[in-house]
Image (cartoon, rainbow, N blue to C red; front, side):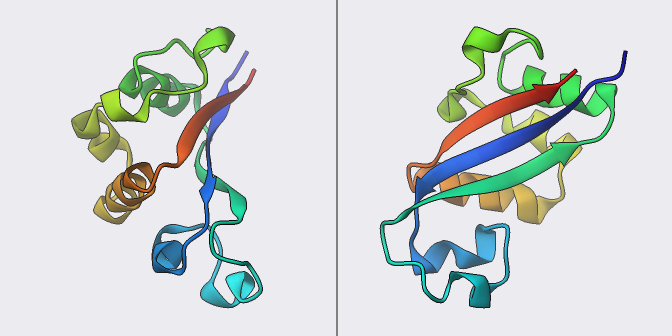
Length: 107
């Protein structure tokens, strides 16, 4: 059985974060500052990537009770092996702005 997964980010909207969010700037035109938004931050399409993403946060892919992630303890080196530098920067920006991250497996 294959495994794919998503990394979901939920937090308070701020215009300065638009470069780090999922949609183009015009999609956020009517979003008020501090509104809660949901962002599909990253999608893993293979079991290897899904396992590596979970490991970067110190959880097991099917350890369902731990999928509200502790973003402060994320292994940025491991994430950099999965992501391009812009995605690592986006993660750090959202994390620094108080976004909560969730690991969502699809097994």
